[in-house]
Every structure is written in C-alpha cells, then in structure tokens.
Image (cartoon, rainbow, N blue to C red; front, side, top):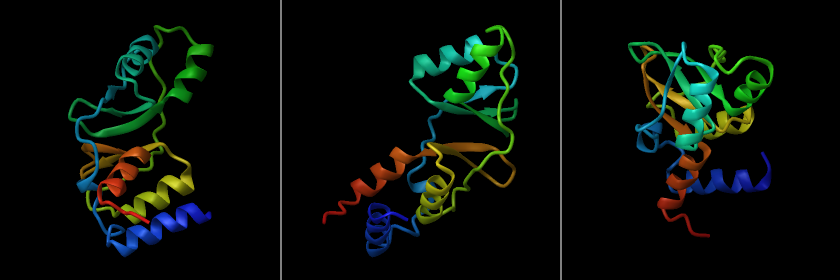
Length: 144
C-alpha cells in the first residue's frame, strides 16, 4: 500500500471504521440492466444517469454480471448499436456484512471503481463505489 492508503486505513482503524459493514454506506438506489439490452439502450442509460458501470440482473434481480463504460467502448466500436450487450460474468462483489477494510482492499487490489453488493442468493441489494467509501469516511469527521 502506498502511504496515503495506509494513512486512510490507519485512521479508519483508529475510529473503528475498518469493521463497518458495507450495508452502512452502500447505495441502494442504483441503476441495473438486463441481459437482453441493446448497446444503444445501455449507452443511453449510462449517459442519462451519468454512470460508468452497472450490474446486469435477471428478472428476479439476481446478479448475472456487470458492464462498464470500457466494455461499451469496445463493443460500440466493433458491433452494431442494435446488438445485445456482452457483459462480464466473473464479477467481484461484496455482501452487506463485508467490512470497509475488505472493500478497500478489494477496490484497491483489483483497481475497481465499484462493485455490486449481493445477498447469499445473489440478489443485488446495492452497489459500493470508491466515492461511497470516501464519503463514508469523510462523514465520520476523520480530521488529521
């Protein structure tokens, strides 16, 4: 870990935030997509909602995968916009009880911008992004 990440983790540990569950700072009002969405519809959804990625779910709300802006760039350049989206199925995720420390490590090591939060039956409950973690820490008034 670089010094700034270590400092943030030390502060989180000091204020006992490292053990805070994801459920205390995840976003539950999130945009999700369906596997049969077209590239055009997905691009429009990203543009309208100003998002850089979204979980792809089935009709029950269970996680099938994720898609990012990067995925869309590649697909838009190589496929018709009417084509169905391709999405990643090998997904990193968190559970509501996953700790802040575990999420920080996952986001940092995997260089992820966000991850879905699921329950044991793989229903998507929310998402957690790097900014959500930063906002949570900042709200705890972790002054130097």
